[in-house]
Amino acid sequence: MTDNAIVTVHSDADIDRVCALLDHDGAIIVEEFLDAGTRQALWDDLGPALEKSGYGDNDFSGHKTKRMSSLFARSRHMAAVALHPLFLGAARRLIQRPVPVWFGGEQVSISPNIQVSATQVIQIWPDEGVQCLHRDDTSHLRPYPAPTTRAQVMVAMSDFTAENGATMAIPGSHRWDDERAPRRDEAVPAEMPAGSALIWLGGLYHGGGQNTSTQPRTGLTLSYIAGNMRQEENQYLAVPMEVVRGYPEELQRLLGYDVCPPFLGWYESRDPHTLLAERAAGGAPRA
Image (cartoon, rainbow, N blue to C red; front, top):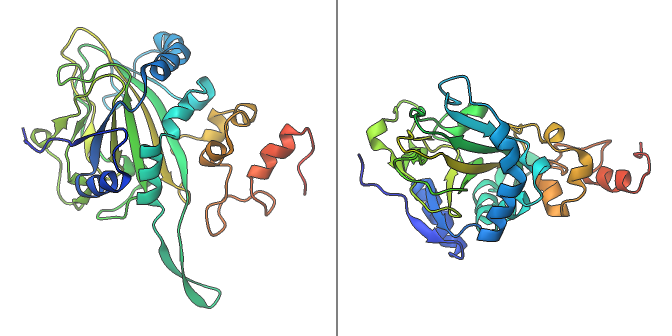
């Protein structure tokens, strides 16, 4: 096994240092990402439905792993994860980088915004095997090397250990090209106590670990992608509009009710966020 451990920082770490670490290593562990009260509130909202969920039916999803999505529809406390200053700040900084384009007869720089892509609770039970190492950017068929267009967080809802299936990751692998295959002996476990979180970039090779313990390990994951890419989980179907309206405007826009510069995602040639306000007021959408 490699000794290339994942660097750990505290949740009040300097954003410049966090972004530099993510640029270099592709992953960091954040201590005390969620306070105990918020984590318990998430358990209260999500735990009963997760308990009723069945296991996966393939090697990638896991034969002894439970997965549950549509998290913003299930718990308003997801806002604490999505709007965490360190995660949201790093995602914006690393993804919203300017792109030079010719527009209107001159060269200008346009930066994309970001949006929520996927949400899941992932619970790995005893006797689950190891998951294959993969890049989350595979969802968008990104060839490497490539600029960063995805940032993801895995919040430890229970302790993550090498024995109970902690996420395995290969620091630095987000800078590899597509010809280099990941090896299991290069991966290190993201061991962390409940309430901490692993943040990683879309190009990092990682995968769920094998659970050889007697207890399940539970993680809650959320990803941000560039606003000009398709969301992995269809948030417009996953989260009813009446639920979206209950979130703060910043999160509404992160869920997709926004325009990505220069003009992706409009509704009737307007900012789609206006539709939320009109529906909330009981009026019909303007044509």
